[in-house]
Each structure stands twice: as structure tokens, then as C-alpha cells.
Image 1 (cartoon, rainbow, N blue to C red):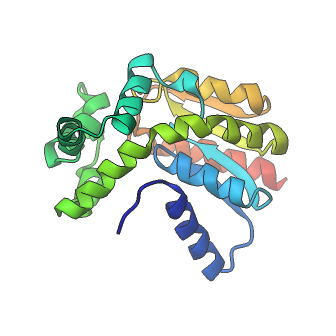
Image 2: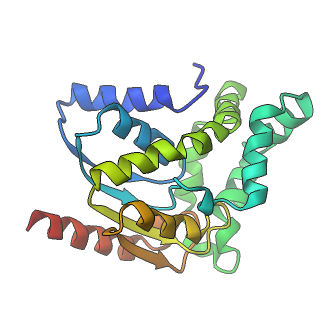
Length: 218
């Protein structure tokens, strides 16, 4: 199956919600889940009860200039050398060491092997890995769509909780703070963790979420 962008992924999730007869929801977005989630919100802007953001970027401030250049090159450079480079990022060692263990090198035992074992189960074939290559090649289009997502936040002012690992070199902490420009009443917590904060700080994040949802229920 060809996943050339996040819009089909958003439609698949929406299809699941429709099948389950879920008419409203609270949305937790992280990493690639942010582009999928924001497209869901643009497709059906009135279905959201609350938004929880964990290292899910929607602002250029959250990307260093080299990171922005990487996404642009991945999108525009169709050479075999560039495709091979991106493909190498989907290898077992890259997933383990350059993703899950990248931000916890001084404390790797905090990261459960379950995390990458689950991911690698879906990266066993070349076709599976090519899907990830295609998503990375398309990712620059998310940057171009950031203004649409920001406009949604400004217009609808959803109750928003931001729990963000401030040690994330991919989606830096300035991206978390940038949300406050459009949803100034958002609750922001910068954690001493990296990109996969929910693996590093599960109890701390769970407490923030429970408190946030309890406040909404009052």
C-alpha cells in the first residue's frame, strides 16, 4: 500500500472512529501523529474535546534550520543516493540507536525494548520500509501546512495540554512554547526527557493528563 502523505492516514483513523460511532474525542498527538491529527481536525473541526501534544510539531520554531533543510532535501531530491540515505534510517540499528536510544545515551535502561520491538515488527520487509521512506519524503509538506494548523488553533481555541521533552533535538522545545502564540491558555510542561518522553516519563505524563482531563470534567 502506498502512503505518499498523511491525508490517507487521517482518513483511515476517521474511518475507524466512524465505525466505532465515536462522535467526539480527545486527541493525543506525537511525532508523525501530529500531521495525521491536525488533518483530522481540519477535516472535522468540531469533533475535538481536548488536545494533548507530546513532541508533536506544528511550528517552524520547533525545527532547527538543518532539520528544516533535511526535510526540504528529502522532498525535492529524488536521486538514488538521497533515497538510499533515507532508506538507511529505517534499518533495525537506526530505529534502535538513532531514534529510541538517541536521547537516553546516559541512561538507556529507561527505554523499554518493547518500544522498538513493536516498531520493527512492521519494518520487516522492503515494502514496509519504503512506506517510511515515502512519509519522510513527504514530510516537508507538513511544514508548508503549519499555517493551516495554527489557524485552526487560533479559531477554535481547544483545551490544550502540552507535555514536551525539552531534550529532544528533533522537535526542540521552542516548538512547544510556540503553541502558546495561538492557544495562550494551553497548559505547558517541559520535561527533562527526549523525543519519546512517554517512554521516559510515563507516570509524570499520565498524572498531567489525568489532572488536565479532570479539570475539563468539572
